[in-house]
Figure 1 (cartoon, one colour):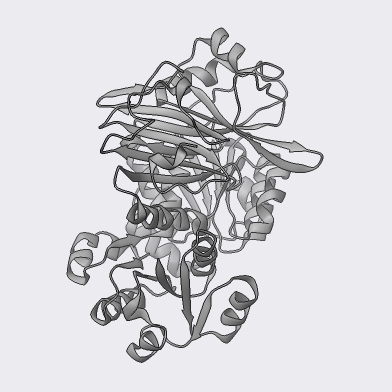
Figure 2 (figure 1 turned 135 degrees about the vertical axis):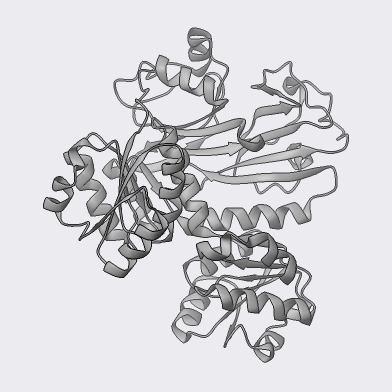
Length: 456
């Protein structure tokens, strides 16, 4: 596909790089020469310097002949204007980044009036991911499929876990659990390696495992593994930006107590007006004495959401050392992700990655071959594994009606869940896929556009 991206910041440049890796012809437009130079040095894309909201600049970038325009500038109004002009020039589809809460509440109207194909809100998406992690306190990350009925949870195996040293087939037999460990990331010789495990795979302490099942079955799994944590009630958030607002709104809705530390007085006033049930503290969230005074040692969860990665890492590490809280930090720089994992932080959230995954899911769904639709796509275990939910619309030769043990699947693929009407199947080799099912596939080193692609 021919795709134009307007805005070469963190989200736009990361998205452009991933689209290029998947074989798309990408043009990126940005009015900052420094961004253009950085992108030219790091990605195989055509760069056009200029204002993406200018019709003349869009014409110069060939926007009218594109299959899709994606507007990712920091300004919501500019993004929507870019999409409006692109549609008038002939772009087939338009995707807009829209972040402001006041726009989000009227998104259906905006989408219809501007003929937007998709609207993406990185801050809301990141808040949703943090919310799931806090709602399932034992996990470091939670993704959902089948409209929330299937969950895929990431969990780091401690040395004290009874699962250490055991083969997967023995674990399933001993615990009698209706779940599937579908991906494992392990440190091998100082380097992280990812495995799609078979039943003979033996777990080790420090493994980051991805487990798929229903919420109830996963709770049972963590109880049996000795890692079940009591539900979170009190949450402390450092940084009062848009993610904090969206997250606090969701946490308050389910009855959690929320305290936000923000240094900007005007932003504190805005938060206090929008979140009347949250405690808003105007102060420096990096001040250790302030954190302790505001109850760090007694909080159940600590979330660091400032705009500076280094600050988030430091405050999260301090919270980890001085409390028993579940700790979550927002990190955007890719080079810091592995570092923070080694430092033992419970959960890392990156808005640019969750945004890119949402758009990539949409792009791939437009390219499917006609026998299945992509309903959801997530990147797991350090972005090395994909989990994709497909809807089976038609019969697929060699796949529909064939027992899983008899399928000729590509290497490093696992079918981890089949959703059939109201039933959730964690499949065995005797199970089959039928027309009308939703199927969750976990894969390594593949970029599937259709369910039939998993066949060798």
